Length: 58
Image (cartoon, rainbow, N blue to C red; front, side, top):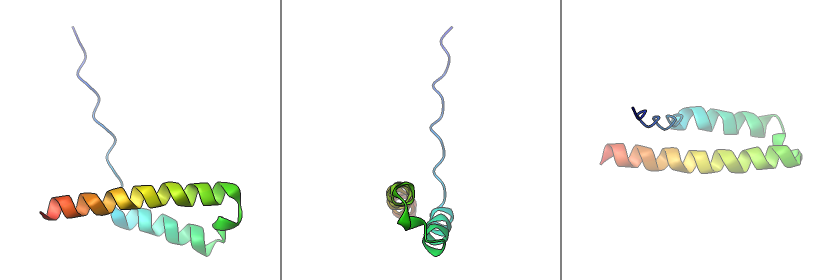
């Protein structure tokens, strides 16, 4: 019997991602290569959250 497909992970809220970005910036996290990489990942996640908010509003 086939198993049902797994649900995709729920995206974090815009405010949660924004808080993490602010914390990274406040801690000077962009100084390291890892910090810059994490910042770029968070920006992608933030943009997806913004698109999600717009889609829900429509």
